[in-house]
Length: 193
Image (cartoon, rainbow, N blue to C red; front, side, top):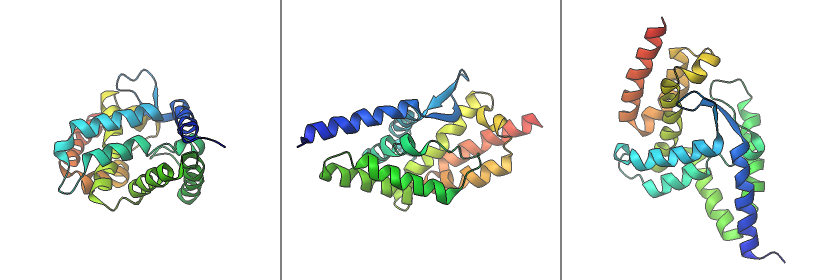
């Protein structure tokens, strides 16, 4: 019989695979694409530093928990860049299967708790999840701006596409961050002509 500690270590070892999932977003210095583990870590730092941007009823500790877990499913499902082309229903199905397998490595109590946290983030309905999702949408543009456009250049992103795919998620959970991002992104697109 597998012990609780063996199950916990198996999960942690599996989570290490997130370091091998390459994302579409470049690092701020544009030296290479970030991986999903780096993205998750960076988002938790965003949550700590930008906690003053959270609205009423947001639990920052839970935001951090959501952000460290939110992309674990990419171990199986891979990363789907927001400006890439993919079948959203197929991606969601793949992520659900990945969540079943990956969280299923844990002891039942941890499995249920962490899976529920991931599901709350995905549903994007609570104030905490909306703020977490806002940070998840805010961080890549900040990196793209620092990297001279990053993935926006690669994917030929227009300002209208940015506003449509990213803006509403940021604005809903962190209006102040949206104002900040919107002004800088607009200036970047204007400078490109």
